[in-house]
Amino acid sequence: MNTNIDADNNKNFSAWLDFFRWAAALEVVIYHINHRYFVKLFEVPHSERLIGHYLFAFISSFGGPAVILFFVMSGYLVGGSVAGRYLRSSKFDSVDYFITRLSRLWTVLIPALFFAFLFDTLALGIFHAAKNGIFSLDAEVAGSAVNHDAWTLVCNVAFLQTALCTQFGSNGALWSLFHEFWYYATFPLLMLAMWGRRGILAQMVMTISAAAILLALTWFQFVGFSIAGYAGIWLLGTLAALRPKPLLPLSATWAAALCIGCLLIWRVFYAPGTATPATFLSKETVLDYAIAASFANLLMAMRQSKNLFRMPMPRLNEQLAGFSYSLYCTHTPLVILIGAIYLWAFQTGWHMKPTTNTDFLYAAVAVAICVGFAFLFSLATERNTPAIRGMLRRMRERKETLA
Image 1 (cartoon, rainbow, N blue to C red):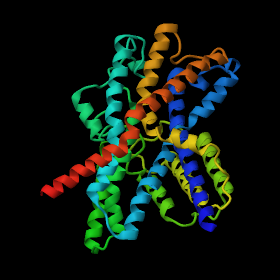
Image 2: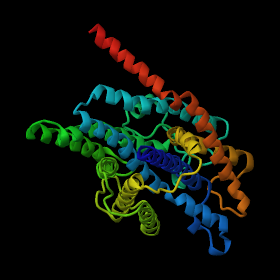
Image 3: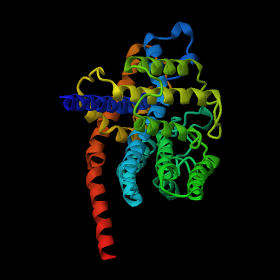
Image 4: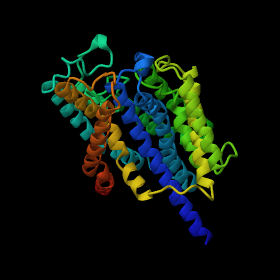
């Protein structure tokens, strides 16, 4: 009986993880749409502000924290599972690890780069995006070129965007994959240094190597959160997966209240644009770490809770989470293409000042198109990740057999 209860609790917690995954991805989409389709709320006189503008500006303002939650969940699901297996077996297959991670990333990323090129080409060639000031959020450099050259393509495939090149085309959201991959790449060094049966010198070399890689990448980084400074956020997720009890002894309800409180404090005090990638200690970094720590604590509290509120429609949450990575990788060029079409067809829909609440239908339609496209895209990509991973593993086995 207890086993069945534990199994039900685990399924319910997994449903909550699915919810967090797709909700964070959707928040990033809404953030990017608001940033492109509407002027900032404070640029509109008080007498002309709409209730819809207040609501949409508030809802869309948590794009930054959504990325922080992504990093925590990535550390929880990837770092936690890999470290957990290693602690149980003392075995780590580095080749299989990178097959698993790269098949997950490339299966979606490479086709997404093709569609970024296609969407950008349509926006530029048919809907006059550059002429109308699209492809830049800064009016002073409106119409600036987007990079579709071979070097930028290869650089993005190698996960070096924002350090050695720009993101490919208009797909600005890809900066976070730069973080994801290099956290994946350096984590085994830290894991083996911490729990491996090696001498102190080998442990020091592995730790210093991981730190040196992240610091070197930070030195060249010019967009996004500091990859070295925010590695701790990813590791907080790993800690949450390995630790049996929450850092703070709170119930799931109180842990959720604390996390929501941190989000609201972030919303009040965070000053976007003041921190640079090289900034390790700033008010903004402290606020981001507070969100990460409170969310990691929430995950631990929810996992051990015996009366966790049951997530409704768990199957739907699983399906939505199943293409959240596709949504993240494809939405930005599509949002820009849709905005170019709006501007071409209706002479509005880009950096507009909403005059009626119906103007927000532009955003609603764009969200629906992005979600629908990502779902169809995932059927040919993300859903086939296990098959591609299996193929790569069989290729490895055949190579080892022939050797």
